[in-house]
Amino acid sequence: MNTLDSKSLSPEQRESLEARVALRLAARLNEAAEQVPHDIAERLRFGREQALVRARAVQRQTASATQLVRQSNGTAALSAPPTVWVRFASLMPLAVLVAGLVMIQHHHDAEQIAVAAEIDAALLADELPPAAYRDPGFTAFLQAQEGP
Image (cartoon, rainbow, N blue to C red; front, side, top):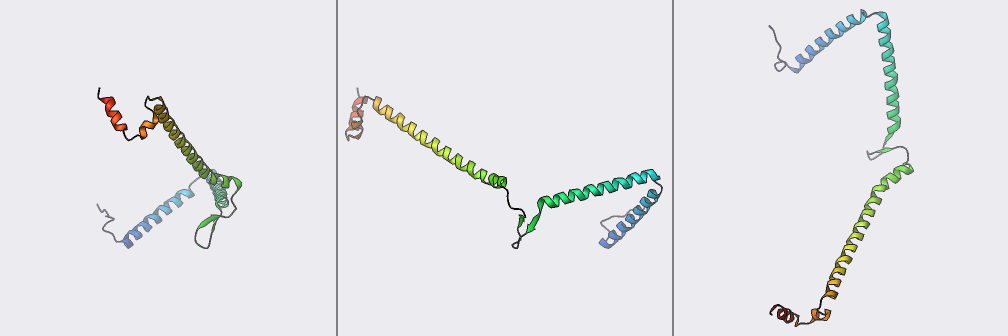
């Protein structure tokens, strides 16, 4: 049994072997294609033509949709000017970001006001007068409250 190891072949020998296999395969396919009945051959031909028409249409659509133009600095840009919707869509993330920052600042200010109001309410409800907090003897007053 003669087996070929593809690792032992040089690149030229491998290419030659592949070319021979390809030629034999193409010859067999050509022989089989000549034996296909006429009606099947016509259906295949019609199917190939339809496939080519569709491929060309898709190629035209993709080419006209993208229409990339190379600029002198090597970057790609759309050839048509941006529409109003494209400009609106590109500015939308910035508007959402600014609105979010404004809402965060408003929430932060409201929390600070609520904390200050809570402290003020505690001071006013306490039996200790607010002027006592500024008095240097306040510590002595607190210690006297804790003692008895």
